[in-house]
Image (tube, rainbow, N blue to C red; front, side, top):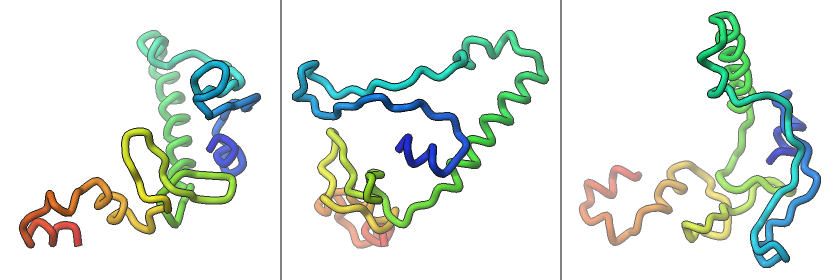
Amino acid sequence: TIRYVKQRTSIPVPEIYYQDLNSDNEIGAAFVLMEKLPGRHLYKTWDNLSLDHKKVALSQIASIIVQFSSLRFDKIGCLTENGIGPLISPCYNFPQRPFPSTLQYLESFISPDSVKSSEAKDLFR
């Protein structure tokens, strides 16, 4: 994801030096070693900023949001080096394919047995 954002936006992202996403490694947990970007946490300095500096900070945040909103995908899933793959989550058992629509993604959270009435089923069609 960081590589994708770096290639398609001007949003500052850290360099990834090494990653091991397998929890069966010597450490016993997935980890990523990455560059520490310069700067300070905004929440720690916000109260001491002048109004002009606050405006600059908000303008920079808005610019980042606009850049993120320009990134479009034709499916819902995990970003991989080969495009969009299936969602991966330790909390949910998603189908092993990307979702073609937001509706199908949202429907995946609902058990067919939990929707009894035809009126309720129509809400999802």
